[in-house]
Amino acid sequence: MSLLNRGSYLVLFLFSTLCTTISKSQTLSPRAAALAERLAIDKKVDQRILFPTAVPDRVILNLTPDPQASVAVNWRTDTSQPKGEVQWAVSTAGPQFRKATHTVAASTEFLSVTNDPITIEANYHSAIIDSLQPDHTYVYRVGAGDHWSEWFQFKTPAPERSLSFLYFGDAQNEVKSMWSRVVREAYKKMPQVDFMLHAGDLINRSSEDIEWGEWFLAGSFIHATVPTIMTPGNHEYAKGVILSPQWKKQFNLPTNGPKGLEETCYQINYPNLKVISLDAEQIDESKYFADKQAQWLDSLLTNDPRPWTVVTLHYPFFSTNPKRDNDRLREQFKPIIDKHRVDLVLQGHDHAYGRGSVSNAPVTTNTRKKSSQTVYVVSVSGPKMYDVSDDPWMDRRAQNTQLFQLITLEGNQLTYKAFDATGELYDAFDLKKDWQGLNALTNRIPAVPEKIE
Image 1 (spheres, rainbow, N blue to C red):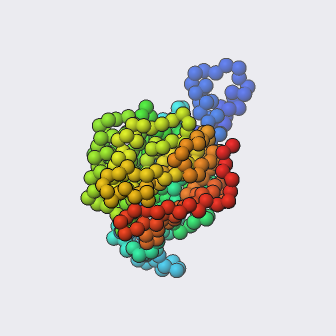
Image 2: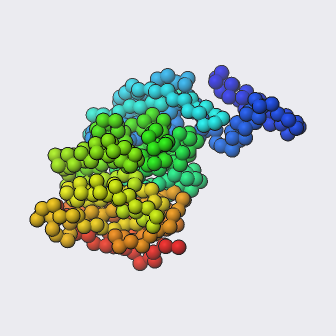
Image 3: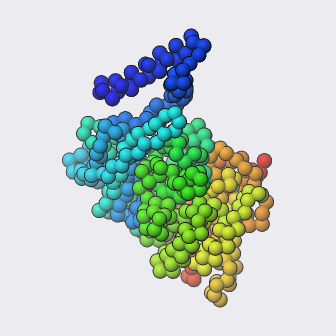
């Protein structure tokens, strides 16, 4: 047993002894009271979720700007591991790949977070696996010395086949207990998706390490085998301006957006799809960053378009909550969405479900067709629920329903399906793009009553 582990067991033994002493004592010193409080917390949580060890945990793949050629990987260890490596290879049917592995050195950053009365210290490791080929299956593991993860497997997208991804609204609350079944049901139903997308509020309190631990536990190996992107929500920020200290340490997201918004506002490019993350909280909090994102988005879609465009951000353009309305967001950014005829906007925040098409405001005579429209979606995957409004823009709505969505692109058609937590189809539509780049929408809503109670 290592000295570190012996120390951990000694601490737990002392805590247990203290607990016994407390039960026999009527008064406690301030120091003893603090220790007792820590012991109470320690006994409530899974130590493996909260405290790192020498063995890598919280392993996750993130998309890079060019997902056909590279993938980003992050993981966490305790501070006894000052360095990390990624070993990777082309997958084989048996263990032969171990004879042809490549090694990539990781960058390592230390982070200390205090969630009273506990301080968690960890090293976060990140690396890029590049020189990958499209439509290939690869294996990788992370670690160093005698401490390694298992081998994980992933596949790069093929340029000529369909592309699919999963979309999740807010997980946020009771993530281990209640969100876990949603992400696992989604993976069970669609294990071959190319990536997963989270529309903000992955957790409830931005710096609470136990909540991040629950998020990683809920997705477990799925995070390590399906590349993921996420846009920050208001709950990833403290006081509206302080990004979660774990965000840039535990994720490895693109830095190709406006300066100052690295890894929160960025773009991903597939041959047939551009995915754009906007930092909605900084749109709301900062006129400077709102203007920067608006200019960047307009320029990006003008100079580097793709046949299909998906924008994700946390705050909805059109709210599902009867007491909310993000009019300033809509006033500044909807003209850009309209101008470039963005196909799909994926959002969270309102803890209900709403999906509908909104016509693009005319920009030129070529956009004056009824079929020129953008589909807006608000969704929730966790258990926190709000009332849903009954607004004209919505074709389908729900409340008190946890959902996940599958979006598939094949040629000139986008297929969208929303499933509830049990795996039952709740909403569906197709978008078919004509030679002018205009979409015709076909609703395929199943014969399931709307869940509005």
